[in-house]
Amino acid sequence: MAADLEEKTDRYGELLAEALDAATIAPPEGTPMADAAADCYEMAASYLEDGTHFRDQDDLVNALASFSYGHAWLDAGARVGLFDVPRDGHLFTVE
Image (cartoon, rainbow, N blue to C red; front, side):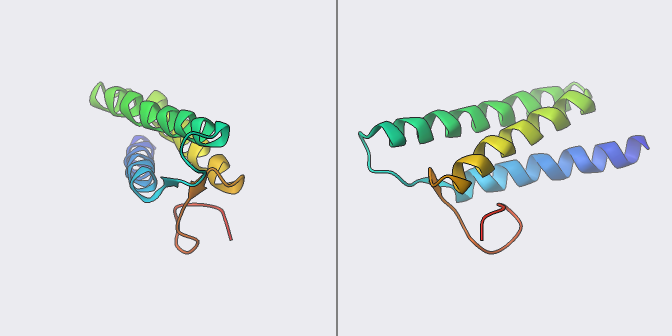
């Protein structure tokens, strides 16, 4: 079971890092929606950083939670139009 948690944690960390690289802010710069997108992006990046710290400490449960929360910020932002993201593939749940 520990091996499953380790594999899943690493996979989710890689997924979040890849999703951060793929997402770009969609609303025009200087608008309130662009500010909201920047906040969501910063939250996702912070969760990646936190998850990496927890993973380095072998705290797999908190690392996995951090990676999952970070991806949720991006995915939700993509669904409401804050981010331009790839529409195919495995990174986001948009059509």
